[in-house]
Length: 202
Image (cartoon, rainbow, N blue to C red):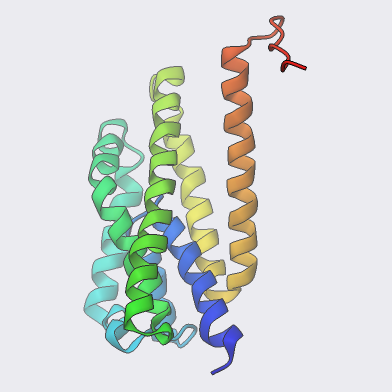
């Protein structure tokens, strides 16, 4: 088995799709099922049902409902509450569907720990961003954030299927950029302009 095609590429694709699940629970599964039906990605033997017509209809319908509901201020909070459980499960499923060549044990472990963990962390980051947006803009900016999340989710999910390594690199850059931004904002909130930060001893 070629390491790149058998392990590295599926793992990169699965990790990105799991992270996307933290933003949109059904989108990675919808994209993955469609890609499997078109022959763009190889689904594991136990996950071929993702590419069936009933599954595609279900996932794409749920995806559309989630995309529309996330634009409504009250509904988006309800979706985030439900997503606390749903999105890690979707992330684990997405990663497991493309990494079955690792064997049942490692596939299960990676799906739960890496896939579910990645989706959960992204979901928490999104929830905090929405909370900050709600406080600063009284919820007015939330639909704009939602549109940005839509574009990012579709872009990353598509890249994960077509060019997994590039998608993983882009995801890493986005996470690093978000970390730097949050750190700067937190530092600005603690030490406003004109109030110097304390210098380290020595």
